[in-house]
Length: 207
Image (cartoon, rainbow, N blue to C red; front, side):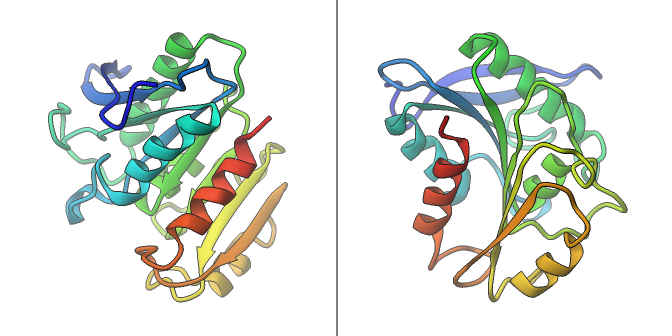
């Protein structure tokens, strides 16, 4: 296993940005791959945030590879923040890299937290199998590509989320296809529910 630091990787976006990333491989070979997106860059979010870092540390032990990266303008990634619009290119570049590094054909999923969750829900790249989103604000975009997509969506919604509590997440996604909203305890920052979220993501992506 590559350990908590991961393998440094550079992602090249379609519009010419270079993004820093870390690839975490299981010791015995992967049975699935998860591309993880981080919370809002303007509020200190990056790939070292507790949520992406926990997924990257724990999932490889279950045979699930993880690719986490910094959106444009964050850390050593080039470019500048674009309110989630150009960040879609960043996520597609991460999918490109994950497919190449982990061998085409493995089940690949998107797992986003907060701002990263909303960005993930706008990307309907045909190479991934579904979305597991944690504490999505569900208010950053006018529409989400995932809404009418038949692939499965897991929405982990904290009961006391300051930006989108479970009741609102259920209401917003009521008309979405193939969508499960699961209540988890606590607030947006998951101090009480990181373990619960981890277990739910793992169960969602395991073949």
